[in-house]
Each structure stands twice: as C-alpha cells, then as structure tokens.
Length: 156
Image (cartoon, rainbow, N blue to C red; front, side):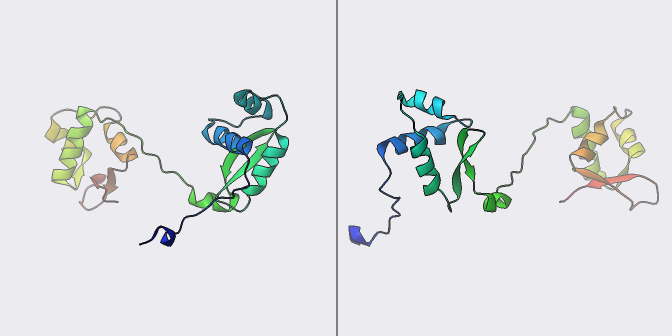
C-alpha cells in the first residue's frame, strides 16, 4: 500500500497560529473563559475577538461548537446531538454485614419473608437493612408465597 492510498482527514489549513493557541486553551479549560483570561494565558495585549469569531464560524455544523455565553467562551456539544450525550452514573455503596447476610438469605431461600430472614439470621432487622437492598434494586417484594410481603432477587 502506498502512502498516498491512506485517507487522512485534513482540517482547514487556514487557521492561524494564534487561533490554534486559542483553540488549545479553550479545549483544556475547566470552565468558560473570557477574552481577558485567554489573552493573559497567551501573554498578549491585543484583542482576539476576530480570532474567536473566526473559530466560532469554523466549528459551525460540527459535533462540538465554540460558543460565547455571557462574554465567556467554551466548547459545547452541538445542540442537535445533546440527546446522545446522556450520562449514566454508578454510585458505589458498601453494604453492611447485615445487608450482605440478608441478601445471601434471600438469594438462597427466595421467596422469603421478613420474619423468615430474621429467624434465619437469629436477630431482628436493623433499620434500613432491607430498605437499602430495595433502594439499590437488588431485591424486590414478590407475592409467590401465601403470606404477605415476600422478597426475591431482582434480575434486571
């Protein structure tokens, strides 16, 4: 395969060195920056408004846009793509010994009632043990026994 056979995406070559520096600063910034902050980082005293508006035009129609909100500049996801940018967060929660024991009993004996769990464990439920497992969707109430309030494991 020849070097010329490779298809390489080329960005516009008409971007100035100053615009490249501005782009890099805004990309790495933790928060939106005003023109003064950008100039301070670049160690220049001249206005960069034209450069910012030039970059803004170059990013129109792309996956990210350069936007100015309340005189501060930042890169943002294009509004038409915001629906695909949902984040799912996982919260790690360490279970107590009682919750682990309760979960083990439910797994082994399901469906099982609250009183059966207490009888197997040999102690009364601590406040919140079963509620924690319910909140985490690890167990759920089920009605397969002929007694009220039985619990089973969630397989979602």
